[in-house]
Image 1 (tube, rainbow, N blue to C red):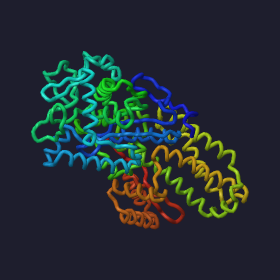
Image 2 (cartoon, helix red, strand yellow):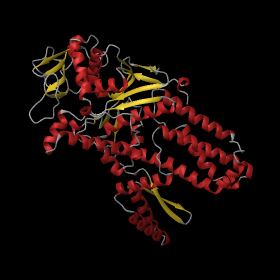
Image 3 (cartoon, rainbow, N blue to C red):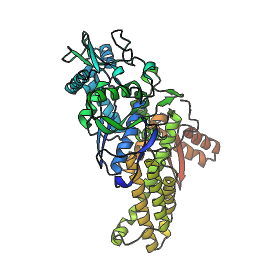
Image 4 (cartoon, rainbow, N blue to C red):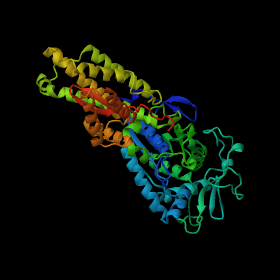
Amino acid sequence: MEAEKMELKLYNTMTQQKEVLIPITPGKIGLYVCGITAYDFSHIGHARAAVSFDVLYRYLKHLGYEVNFVRNFTDVDDKIINRANERGMEPLALSNQFCEEYLVDMGALQCLLPTHQPRVSDHMDHIIKMIEKIIEKDCGYVVEGDVFFSVDKSPNYGKLSGQMLEHTRAGERVAVDSRKRNPADFALWKAAKPDEPSWESPWGPGRPGWHIECSAMSAHYLSPKFDIHGGGADLKFPHHENEIAQTCAACEDSGVNIWMHNGHVTINNEKMAKSKKNFRTIREMTDSYHPLALRHFLMSAQYRSPLNFSKSQLEHASEALYYVYQTLQDLDEGLTPYRELMSEDGGKAEQTPEAKDIIKKLKGEFEAKMLDDLNTAHILTGAYQDALKFINASLSKLKKMQKKQRLSMLVSLVEIEKAAREVLDVLGLLTTLTYAEVLKEMKLKTLIRAELGEEDISQLIEERITARKNKDFEKSDQIREELTRKGIALMDIGKETVWRPCFPSQADSSN
């Protein structure tokens, strides 16, 4: 793809409208996304943010941009210190553990590694230098070893979130402090407390406030002025609002062209959060659902919309993805006997007009949705489903075709597969495994959810075969229905009975 020919529109939180992405440097994009505070396993709310911006990263690369993608780890924070004390660990050892666990989860979800993954503890010099600049500009002040940012010196404070200064809270991670000149002032540097990790600074030993880290690291890796800044909707205030104030105070030529925020994952229509104890960890979900099914679910709504979590929704995502992979596997098997014939033809045969039309519609629909603020909702429906139906319908006709007609159909199927794979790849739903290997993994997850083993299924299939031989159709139907309730569909193909995952007939959508 040639980026300059494709107008990607992204919703800018700052202007509250969709805007065409115009890079600061032609052909290049600077992207910063706020990462996790590493004190526990990440939940699927974190996964949604990661997948949303991974889709952006992949699509920008698909359009031909060179992307410098930075996603940070907060490894110095009150929550980390408190959890480390509970476990009798060093705070940095605890945060390092959960940074690594997060990367395991990201790998499972097919999220590409960012260009840089900086940690706060490795960038104290950059943070301290930025705080010094803020103080020099008379936008920060020191009180007993603490350093605060003076929001009164930031004339546009509140523009991103729409929060008027007189209505702002003192901050989410710090208590109201009577030493502040304005209750809305926030900490840039915190004086050291006993038995807490600290670093030397011009104001005495301490550690950075939460907000300054992203200002310092984004400026270091991308410059103070860059293209896109992303994060969850809950970060608009105070975190991103404070980032803007700090960076503007420290750097004259600063600014972000487009601010992007993904919507919350909700459960029973309430935001999923560790503080509410209503969260599901990524690891918990991928223990019983294929990670690609979870990724598919996380893309099932446009990234800015709230996404209500339920196991029923995950089952739907799993079933839809299984159908995609099963169709591609059937295609791979169906083409195998003709590989030599296609090789001998040397690419002379042309696609059928119907296939050309299907591919054109598939690609056109995909690009239209993605260019419109990454609208991944129902992305594998419509023209994509038409392509899969064409594959299934065509495979059964191959044997009956004349050689020339068959070659044309074979070329058509190969090109449709390429187009289908490209969409999956950009969405991060294509792995390095074969179709058969992915299907095997998905079946294994189905067995885990059904609390059955392969031998249990084989035994039940044998019992059903025996029941049918004995004309005990009531028992035969009972076995089939019992397995369907567990998400396992029996299929009679000729004289053989096989099974595949299906949507459980009594799935609890409220779970």
